[in-house]
Length: 81
Image (cartoon, rainbow, N blue to C red; front, side, top):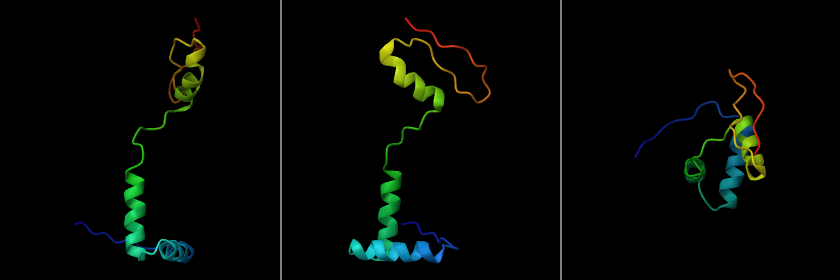
């Protein structure tokens, strides 16, 4: 198994981690492992940009064209049915 060290954690973060571990009946080390497992097992679908989110909202209303993300793209109006 791999190991790594995390340096320069703020005291308040360490204290909160200790309290969280105690609430769950685990050591701080096991609590950190569980936090990491949970974080990497979350949905791996990347979040879309604003254009993707807007297109998803209006897809059921007949939006047939993509809305480009604003980063580096010209802005064009969308097309509806």
